[in-house]
Image 1 (tube, rainbow, N blue to C red):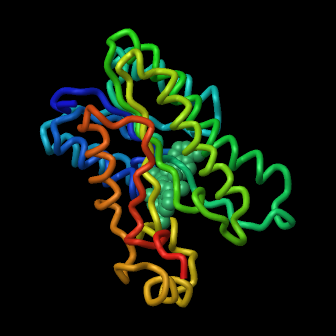
Image 2: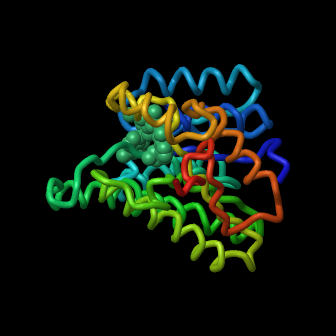
Length: 249
Ligand SMILES: NC(=O)c1ccc[n+]([C@@H]2O[C@H](COP(=O)([O-])OP(=O)(O)OC[C@H]3O[C@@H](n4cnc5c(N)ncnc54)[C@H](OP(=O)(O)O)[C@@H]3O)[C@@H](O)[C@H]2O)c1
């Protein structure tokens, strides 16, 4: 897909991976709607950067874990832009805790934000894509959804579900020339890991990540851009983890 003039929504674009992705897509000439949940100042700064690149932008406040807010966001995008060509489902935060530690509201929240948030944005974006017979969705999964991980049962489980939703949806919409892919990041240096103890990050860098450093949000963004641009990739989960999950010993 040639991104010039294409209409894109990146959820959770005020910071981290979403911000880097929104800017990378704008760099390719796309008009990018910036979704955020609470950080209006950061979101406005991203929107200003997009405008400075010569692209159009919209600021879209909505909690992707709330169906009504997401519906309102899509109504306003529909009014302003008449639908989307590209959707990047990135929004979401941590939901730490083992199965025994997490209560049901915490599980519900993880499901609402990561899995249903992704599914409902897809449902609302797809009709325009199907009508135009062109569209791309990229979901942000996680390597935590590829392997068992101790202490983040809900997060790892919903991310595994996001990756499987990607494959199922890719099959459902391929006849309409809509592609659905996923990027599974490893440990990326964003606010998401601000609460990760320094010694845990050091241990990962020294012993687990083959490239011996954390990833940069821009490196995940480049993977998203390549999945959007390459017209012959669908149903794929692209791991961007510096070799974190490749080793067996
Ligand atoms: N960093 C990593 O190592 C890593 C690894 C694997 C996967 N991921 C995934 O990558 C995605 C982005 O992570 P990140 O590291 O960039 O995190 P981040 O720096 O903490 O940024 C999170 C972004 O998501 C937005 N957000 C959070 N909850 C939201 C909600 N309910 N509705 C709408 N927006 C919401 C935040 O908006 P506000 O600014 O308004 O709060 C912010 O823009 C997440 O899905 C995360 O699970 C991250």
